[in-house]
Image 1 (cartoon, rainbow, N blue to C red):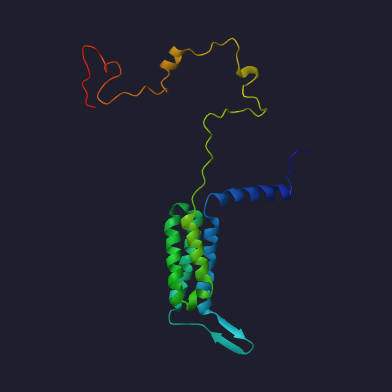
Image 2 (image 1 turned 45 degrees about the vertical axis):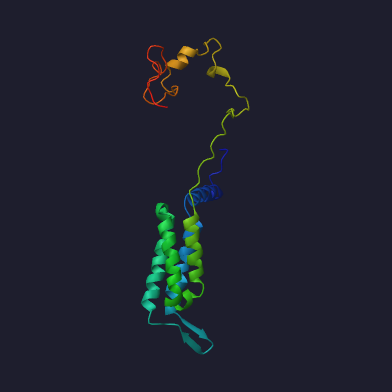
Length: 197
């Protein structure tokens, strides 16, 4: 018997964790609100609302415009999910389409324009997360809490690096040199100072 469960709950847990990581890498909620805003904007102008025997049709001459705005908002919501690099464009476009839906689709499909404006604003404001940098001067610790490695990683007979070895290291930064001079020529008695400033 293994220590890890391979049942349905383990698969669901892995799927939930994978979805969480996918969701964290993109403006998920902005895309969802924008996608949901396109449904009432595109659907309500074509819908017949009935109250008992009273049928109300909210169709206008701009029915095709409502359908186009609704489909564009759904596409922009999907774009925010799958192409998060263009999130600012998609956010601004969804805000503009939400505002245009007010006069075009009978108050923007009741609340669809609010979802479009909030989703677009969230997309414009979303920024990808970055890993927290290490604090300078903080020492790294091993999992057991000790700052020094133990066992085969440390050889007590190995000599400590000398200053010459540090100078020969190609990754060390050289001393800053003033413009127009090399470090050994900067101030010499026979040469004097030959640079301005």
